[in-house]
Length: 181
Image (cartoon, rainbow, N blue to C red; front, side, top):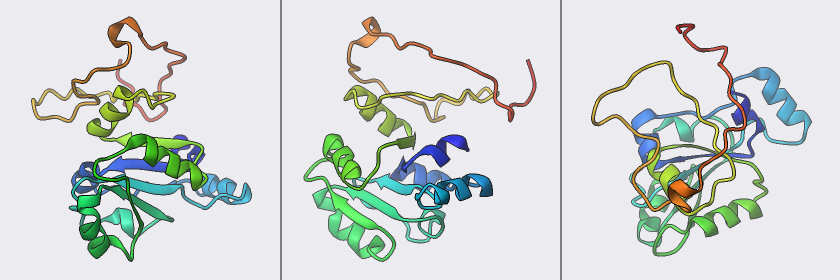
């Protein structure tokens, strides 16, 4: 995935880790080589956010790719350290998740381009707090109609509401689509 290769870090929430068990790797050898040639690590920093630190140390996320970082809250810090200290750096943002502090900490660590792959709670929080610069949406050529299916966003007070619509800058069909019209 080109977007992953261009990112300094990839962020997902704990629910996404538990549900999908993602590896979050740059899978193209050519893109990995370009990252290394430009002085970057082979894979972007992998970041997760958790309010309870209920994360299994056996998940694929922890055992492949490069450096990992966990952001949590004070109340979950002891559990995060017990479970994940040998696998990742662990940072508390205080008594509650503090997105501006989290983003500042990533900036101090050299992250200029953060790719947020999900899930819906994280997307909602970042957009509701006006902390996203760009949205790159992929529309899968599938219909998912289950009531419990994950959604991109949850109800929230978004800055500007419907009076501040987004502007579509481009659109294209992916080479990986199913080819149906």
